[in-house]
Image (cartoon, rainbow, N blue to C red):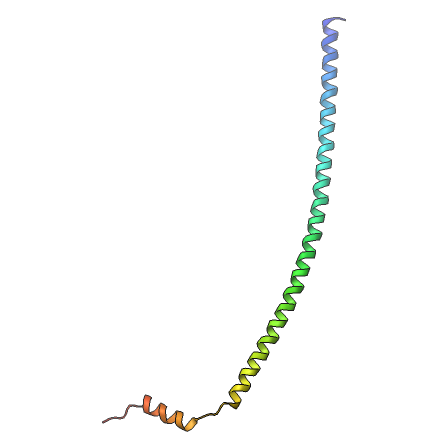
Length: 103
């Protein structure tokens, strides 16, 4: 074999190797992309489930808090209704404190 033929054969082998590396890189990129796609789909599914669960929990807690607030407000209003009112004494005291009589 001549030097020229040896160099030609080496260039052919190098070209084949470069094609193999390129093909392997494309396959690796494809697999990575597919893995990322699958992981993203799983993440989105799990995330959506968690969000739904938290939203439901929040709705229940908010409803309980509103009902508790309504009951406390109702009890407070009822306590105000039964509390004795001393209007005459209040007006008398207010008049003494707020109205300045001229001497």
